[in-house]
Amino acid sequence: MEVNFFERVYAVARQIPYGKVTSYGAIAKVLGTARSARMVGWAMNACHNLEDVPAHRVVNRNGLLTGKHHFDGTNLMQQLLENEGVTVINNQIVDFKNHFWEPEMIS
Image (cartoon, rainbow, N blue to C red; front, side):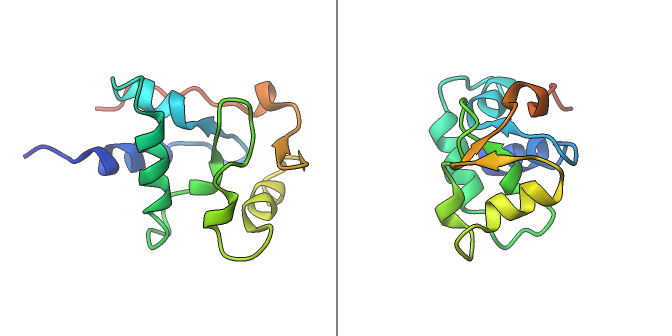
């Protein structure tokens, strides 16, 4: 039985280490669908009822919190990241390259 695309996205997102972030595009690339970053975004938007998927750790390729409006509260995404030691200023992760996690192929 084939796992659907959203479930594959969630499997990668669950691997993002505490205090690290990755991008929609990086997830799409590791899934073999490099041009599907937008679909990864849709998957992340649809996972609000899945407490084990750290959607706050997925940002755009420049470290911008483009998905923040999908979180309850004004700055919840930022607060969750800052609780993990990630500094955010003007909706952008400070020292993005240092916090970036490159996903690896999952089996």
